[in-house]
Image 1 (cartoon, rainbow, N blue to C red):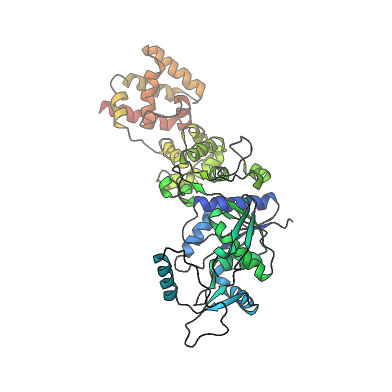
Image 2: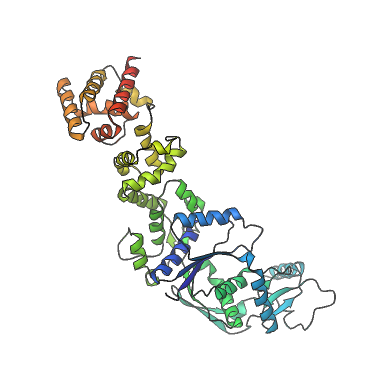
Length: 471
């Protein structure tokens, strides 16, 4: 077993989004590539915004993407006693101190600095106090940051990034109500969980020097860091819903395949030659940070949709039958799942995969195979279900009834006989039949369409179309 231990640590203040999913994926791939462990940690110390609903949604998204975790989920709100013991240790060692400045006092000093055009930093007035002032309010706890020198973050993607210690505040590690703060609990958790590599978005990079000082103050070796470049929208601003990026669960509900989204996410910042499409096994085998780029990636919804269509084409039809079933149930096309012949459904799907970019589109097109009857597009009905086409439909209907076996060859021969009889081209017969079968002018090839639909349903559809013409 490798000593690689990585973690994904979302805050449950929303659903799992594209950026978070990519971070989870890169952690998962690094763990699997190195035979390591992938830990899930829920950073829920923001009790005003964190909810159990979002925790479950985040885990649902990860399960759907098949990013299985080896340990956890651990919740920070269940570890306050652990954090308290580490805070007491820092106080006892003289590496932290109690601060009696109130929020109102700090805000007043910040406003004063702004008026003077200065950047506000805490003036450390409580740093060397030996005891609490008389009548002091409840104290927060601040970490004693070095006041001079530099600290360098060694990063697997960015290389060495150096920060001036003088630019960093003595950060609060416990609020006056006793609750610990983010930069402190992250370090404690990573120490306790023996995290070897911290892989996260580069919006966390400015927190890292502060966290390095806390590691060192506690006497622990810091992990290896890798800060992933941002994902941007097409206008090169930070990715948001207006760029078409939505939550992972929303992509699932819109009919995207998990493997397609994983493949797309990994290519937002990582590459292996010119290859675009990867199996999951290939990703695990090939993934390394040497191939992660330093520049931000641009999210392209059209590229994701194209990739999803490619995955639908190559996914085994039996597997697609299982995947599309919830969508057929949701839209009311199927009410009794147990009654569906899954082998037949896979055969129907095979005729539609070239035309379907999502499972929602696939389910929509499957309706005309499954429904008892179809609704006619008004323009298609007016153009193709006419007195002129009635003889073609009548002859095809009679021919299907006479066929003992519906195959591509027998249907092709039947249509050839009818077109020859009426001295017309195939399209003149096929298009009215297509409208009769599906209600519109778009469908798979007419022979495979009728073959999959079956004799009784095909005759019923033609009878209905003829009734429309006569009516």
